[in-house]
Image 1 (cartoon, protein in one colour):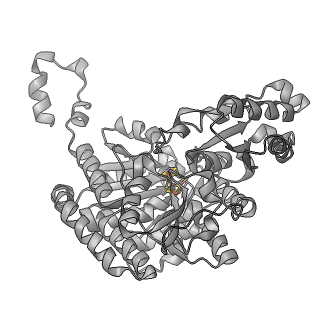
Image 2: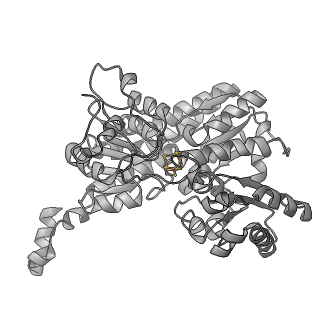
Image 3: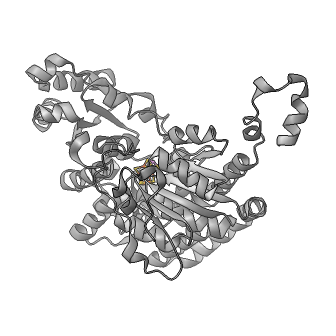
Length: 475
Ligand code: CFM
């Protein structure tokens, strides 16, 4: 049976439709796991909320924008500082968090006044910052606070500021994926083409769906600079609010994360005729392929080849050192969705690593189409996996390393299986050529770290004087 009912799911048999085990000679299109559907009751879902998808993933990355969360304090705190997206202006986005700190009285009597005060207070506190995004949350959406009216009033009173509103409360969709969509569409409807910037190159593009995790964007920017390509806007890694208002000026949209940001690329194509080019930025083969496609579009193939040759000369020997040592290791990937299909083939081709289980928190069917096409036979493909399922899958496939978030990561550590932070990275960036060597290094350090063997020794049962020998044995 291609769809799998795990033992731990015997009381929620509907989960069978969400777990696929790829077998030889199958038409995999017939067996796509159900995805982007409401979590089944009884499942301890790992998903985030729709508000989080808009704020933590996309809006909150911007380097020059106040993020005003209109709601109780927790909505702001819990979508702040859990991802590492640095900026080249001193990490403004990671230093501060803003909230209207709604209390019961505001819920009863309305929170618009409170919001207006908070917006003004934030701008007064930070006179150098002139841009803001205001988000609704579950309580403020439920009581019907009109955040657009409030921001309009403030913008009238403060002509030098610009404010964007995102009305995407946590309950608006089945996962954070909904928040991506709402922000994408809101931005193109309200902000694109409200500003023009200076164009300095005949080659211009938007780089879409890359959030500068530990410097990804900044690393790739060195390639675009060397190729003479002007990036009009980064959506949204190390990006600015005003650059994103100029997205209509680019000649090409290059999309890395299609899941979170494909929507705006499609709209830019529809409304402005700007073509969309999807690339993978993780892995040597993929990165080289991406650079080749971009350069072919602009007719600068030779420049592209020179850059690839330089990067290979510098980084490929290092990659191969790790490949020799990682070859044949088994890996699991439990992240949001796209990284499954970005990574499964790149670690296989570039490092000889086999991906044996993948779980997506919020990927859609098209993400599963891609990952199953690129992934191996004998591998599990899971939608919205839960902890009990993870434990059972670990017993079935015995991975050497798991790329996942800290929450599940801390859990698998207790089973003495190493994890690498698949969301915010251990020591990134991971994109580009240099980045993939970093990924390989983190994987190597995780797999060969003797500490995890040590963790299996119960020191209460051991004579501490014999420990050094035990340690050597274990390692
Ligand atoms: Fe795109 Fe992302 Fe991802 Fe994502 Fe995410 Fe992320 Fe992810 Mo964590 S935008 S979909 S909502 S690549 S935060 S930077 S790592 S789950 S696979």
